[in-house]
Length: 294
Image 1 (spheres, one colour):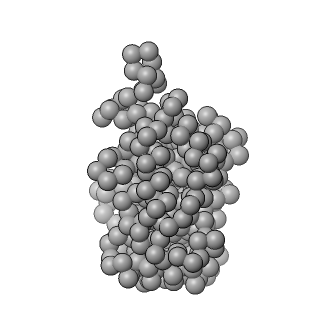
Image 2 (cartoon, rainbow, N blue to C red):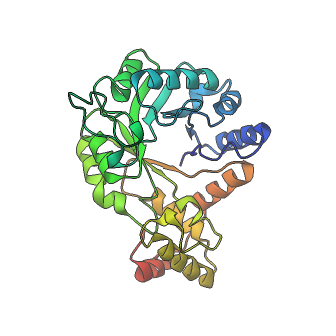
Image 3 (cartoon, rainbow, N blue to C red):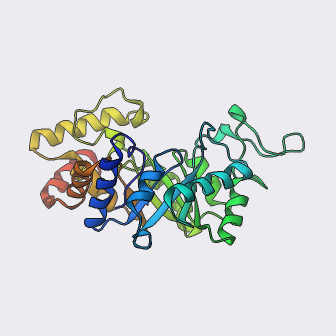
């Protein structure tokens, strides 16, 4: 289990640093960050212990730019992250913010950058983000290259280049859907890539509070299924977040599970969810009811 970086800006700097230090105390050493996501706090927290952790950054938005995957913006994003994080390399740099197949198009003579929906540049096009990340890797500023997204088409397209070391998926592998295992995992295995399973708690749908059955986070039918699971757990005195976290940790992949805590309490809750004992009969009954188990 590692720590996702999406929510670390919610509290104060002191709270953020305390949460990161608590993670280290618990033996958690994989940290995910992103541009504009208070990377300076991570830099302060990891001062003096950079060599103890795997540090992942993203190339997407810098300042007010959103999902700019040109070569220049990619380099600028990495170099700004390095300064903020007080390090001279990222263990992993993820292309992030390209999440739908229609957001880019294949480069052509009259559209050499492959600009598609909203003017987004194809990060995999020649001379753009992926090429630039490989240059940064050659310079020692990046060790591994990845891509994060929800769309199976987007993830497979990146993997099939043979140049991506790891993919991050979110909301597509959890208790209420295992679409990633069906649609992407065979390509992951064929390419020998690593996997990061983000949002194991369904961005709150499986965190403990009653899920909203209309939430778009669950995709088609997912939120309603999450509610049925929550009701089943509540009737039996079972913590659904324990099942959710441990289901992802038991996934048949070589990878990392990334919950998204934001302070010491939430770090402790994530760790508890990952380590709490779950009686085999609970899993057997849950699987009999929903067809899902570790």
